[in-house]
Image (tube, rainbow, N blue to C red; front, side):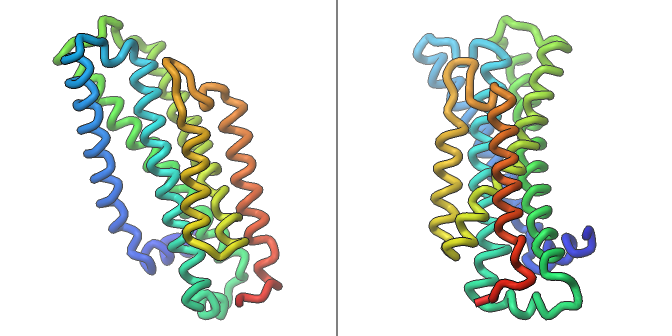
Length: 230
């Protein structure tokens, strides 16, 4: 399976997407700085606590890379069906389902890694920025760190599954716009935050949505061995 995943990365030159990830993170950094500048000029506290700051960071990161996952779905699945190259892929002496599972795992790994690592990087930057500018009186404690690390891990794991929900819609309609629109709608529902609360704060919500994503992936590829390619 790892060999198939590596072949998919090489085939689509997915390493070039790392550049997009880095650019996105630079934009996030700029957004954090802009929020700080605008709020302090208005004599308001930009972030009330570490929990609030990390929640905002996670919401923005999760929203961005959930849509990124939909772009990968369009690239790895729908484009092959539209161009007909999927027929060549299915001529390989490997079960079709195994090939499709490799694509699904690649999208899940990419989504998890980008969300988890981006959160860590931006959270670390926020901590260092606070050490220099002292706009939070709250000290960083081991309890706060472990609590937010747990939240980030749950968010990344859940998003790896949630990012697969557009796969079912895209495969059913064979439509790239439908795939991207469904991802944006999911982001709109799951990324809304209010003070120190978001839907992801309730563990059952992201876990349930992740289960829906995994079910969507299963329904999308379960009949691939017998289903007509066209």
